[in-house]
Length: 144
Image (cartoon, rainbow, N blue to C red; front, side):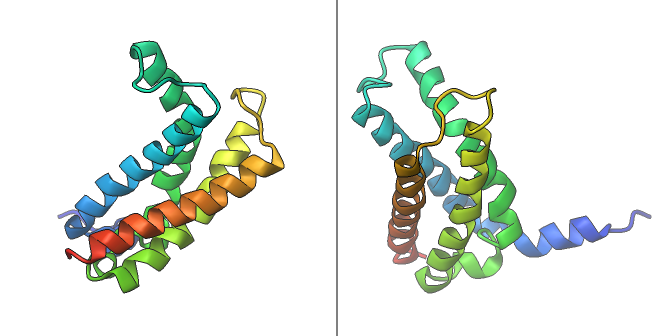
């Protein structure tokens, strides 16, 4: 008979399958606002002209997606409460995004990732990411 480890119990309390639509939407929103930034800077065209452009976009987004995948479940962004209402969902998304963005920024600050971390970029990632995720979660909350 298998027993639950502390990690299994912790994640079981932090991730609810009812929140799966939120997870899909969150990832799409993160990629979308990063894509908007790449458009602004001419890094990736609209529409992406080929696989190389998609790879470039994912290369920019990857550190932030990694940060999100690590932090969001720990904060409870996909807990049962998150899927109940915008009132619960929006703060969880913002509380998840701030440390997730910090992780992404820290990864970008390494010599292994192109792009660097200018102060303006930090502010944009924190503010635009928070607002984008909050807006998405608010709209999604109207249909939960």
